[in-house]
Every structure is written in C-alpha cells, then in structure tokens.
Length: 132
Image 1: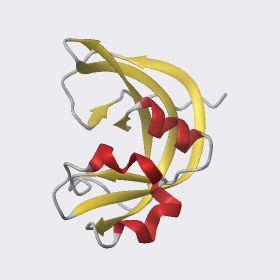
Image 2 (image 1 turned 180 degrees about the vertical axis):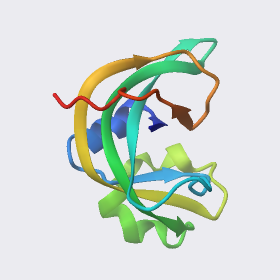
Image 3 (image 1 turned 120 degrees about the vertical axis):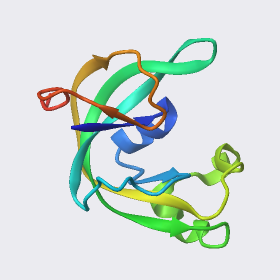
Image 4 (image 1 turned 45 degrees about the vertical axis):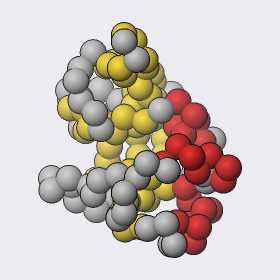
C-alpha cells in the first residue's frame, strides 16, 4: 500500500469528516488508478526542519483528481476547506491538483520509519490495514 504524507492540521480536518479534497502541486503518479486505496500518513518534524518519519492515521480511497487554478479553486471550497488558510498554498504554480478522497477510515496508528520521501511512501503489507 502507498501512503500519502499530510501535515497534522489538514489531516485532522480529513479525519473529522470536514475535508475530502487534498490539494497538491503535482498530478497523481502514473501508477495510480481511480479508487485505489491508500494510507494517510501524518508527517512529523524531526530534524533540521525536515519532515522525516511519521504515523499512519487512516486509510481511504482516492476517487479522482481535479486540475485547478486560482480562478477555479473557490468552486471546491466545500471539499478542500482551506478558508482563511489559503496562504499555505500561495506558492503553488498553476495548474495544481486536488485529490478527492472517499471511504476514509481511521486505523490503528503505526509509526512509519524515517525516510526521504516527499509525498508518497511505500508501506509494507499489513501496515495501515487494521481498523480501530
């Protein structure tokens, strides 16, 4: 299973059920297929300001992605829930993308090892598959 690294505050919004759209600068990778199950991994700041390891918090499906620009972003506020936090993506170049999530299920927390991945991590079989 692949894990998508997400910062704590956006992940909390996803786990609360308020947010189902995750904004990203890049398209989904070539290996991705609509409806694919992934893990949602909270990144943890460990050393020198670089996020290294973290915790698997949930699993979900990514149904599809939406290509966005600054003019279309507000049409999807109900999914990405940025509101006044828009400054966190002000450095994004257009186009940027929103991954639309479904079937979000919290799972037993699992620490994943320190790694150099920026967005996606490889999880071994069995990780992030136990529901709480």
